[in-house]
Length: 71
Image: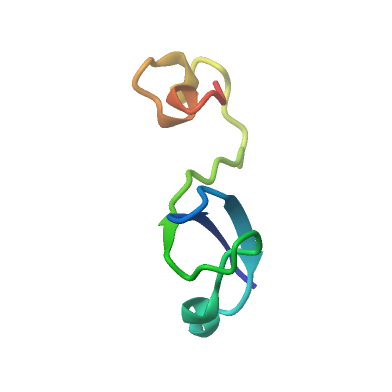
């Protein structure tokens, strides 16, 4: 089941919910019960395969993982 992350536009609470995509419209803020939400899109970073440091994009300043504090 996918995890969705939201920021509430009313109280600025940031939270995650795990639910089927067909139920996304029913999500409301657990803090203030508002349904005025902004979905947050985040970077999913995983290390798969066998890459060496010299092959890794983390060596570049333009690498997304480095910009988001993972490199």
